[in-house]
Length: 93
Image 1 (tube, rainbow, N blue to C red):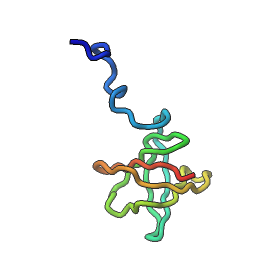
Image 2 (tube, one colour):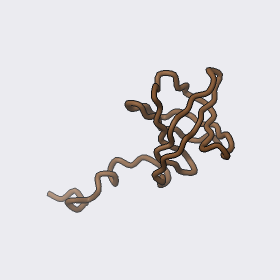
Image 3 (spheres, rainbow, N blue to C red):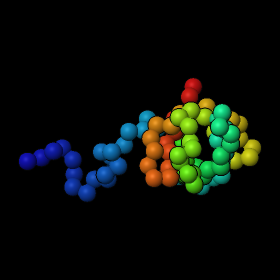
């Protein structure tokens, strides 16, 4: 029985839900919301979203502004998933 894919094909090919490719990154970042500011680390980044790492994700709101590095501008972001100490976000247009 054939399922139309080759053995050894990358698992990511079947699990990928992102609209675009993300680049790996380890950059300091800051989020800002009504609750105040929190530091985080950007683990990967694309024009449409990012994967962020926090020391405590319980305080991360559903919507916030994100600034990557100290020179970057603020972007509106929405949390799409949470796993362990990481949060996946999409950037609002």
